[in-house]
Image 1 (cartoon, one colour):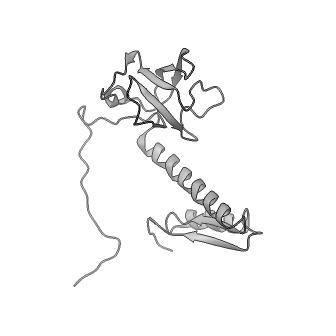
Image 2 (cartoon, helix red, strand yellow):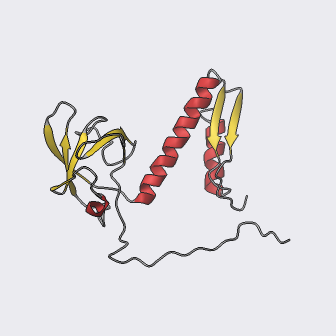
Image 3 (tube, one colour):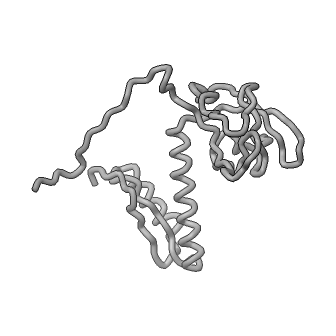
Length: 178
């Protein structure tokens, strides 16, 4: 048997009109919603709608993207093709029934993925804090590189300096050279 660590291969199709990059609105939807539009369950921190001036809240419904109505069962993803970083008009129906519009800059799926990673870290840290009564800190080692090491080191000697211990999470670690 042979085992070579950190090797692999993959294929990524070249970009074309058919597989164009689809932007992300930075929200989670209520998939139990049966009506037209997209009912918002959560606005992800750091996303396009996480602004003081945002009109969108959990429980509201996104009714249109750039004037195109989102109907029940409709594949709305094509409405977000090549929209990352571009001004996009979003129609909103508030939980109260009030209708409004808002212009946002949708984000790339890579940016959304980064926001979800930060969300996961916050959730884990809160869980550790709660279960330990505040006695333990939590850090995640994202990859074995200098930047990750510096972040972990800074958290341990900074915000968690007065804790009795630290939970060091290496799950999903991307590897590296440390």
